[in-house]
Length: 210
Image (cartoon, rainbow, N blue to C red; front, top):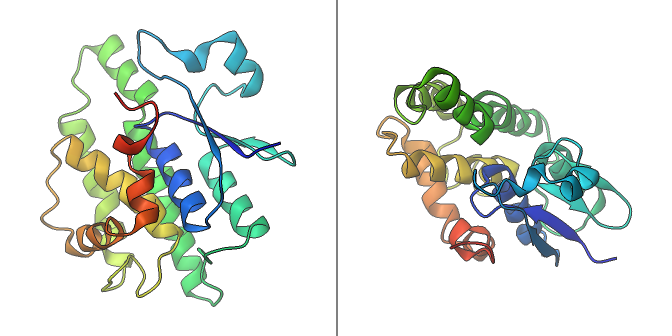
């Protein structure tokens, strides 16, 4: 079967997987899943049968069918040729993994759509204000300290750290989060966004973008 990525154009988790697929020059089919509140296609019975967690991304290649972006990224790294996205040598390999987890475990989940909708619906609060900025800044503080001087997050080679960082900075800029104190992170993102793999993965370039 062809490689399929169930995706939503503005999902940062799907965005990071698109970047990795492009960096590794892997051809894939995008299967759009609308997360818009008035559609919520991810909650449909048909999609729940595919992915019981009812989230994107979800990846299929005929050998595995898996959700969770970090699991997908590790699978791609271990089973597909192309760009090496985890450095071979330690301690850099583990530093990249730690950086990825800052984004995937500490920052992104607290701005996830289901979290922000719950805050808005249950408490009547605006999660795109202080809530969003607080958790972005706390995570970015640690990521900035861990990153190298560039041009990318960990030096001269693009890694999985960049694949996770670019979507998170995209979200920060979307919600007008101040980024003045993160020069290494923003410089790495600006350098990445000059590369075709990142340009093609951008939300506005996706088939389901409005």
